Amino acid sequence: MTTLDQEPKAPPSIMNIAVKWGLISTGVTILVFIVRVVLSQNPMENNWVGGLLGLAIGVTLLVLAQNEYKKTGDGFMGYGTGFKIGFLVSIVSIISYALFIFIYTSFVDANLMDAVYQAQREKMEAGGNMTDDQIETGIKFAKMLFWPIFLIGGLFINAILILIITIFTQKPNPNPAL
Image (tube, rainbow, N blue to C red; front, side, top):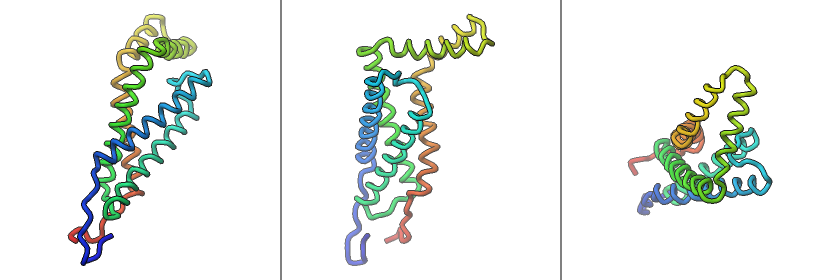
């Protein structure tokens, strides 16, 4: 905080904070991915434990990024600034994690995505209300839409979470003119 006889602190770089915490998020997510591979689990398979763990990691890292902004600046962070930090962290994290997944599924384990699509096929067949042609069409669309949904869907879900979380982490400056 500043007093009247001190110069106000320059605001910290939002982009530097976003890149730092986005890459930390990616690193943690890759670590979880590798642990699941080592435990012979499909790291691309969704389950409630993985979803809950991912949510906890994401919320924690977002709060840490926003707290860094407040601590390295004047102690305040408006709602818009908090959202911007969170969204930029998400962009960095999702793009860098997508790059990791692309490299992993292209060069390390090319069969991983086939296992994902086979699991989807089995779920469709178990439902018993789809023809073979409908199942083939569904798998074709799943393959075609995987990356757009991964990127856009991830950003959309994160944006909603950021909007909610920033309500609680914001700390508006009571004297913005000073």
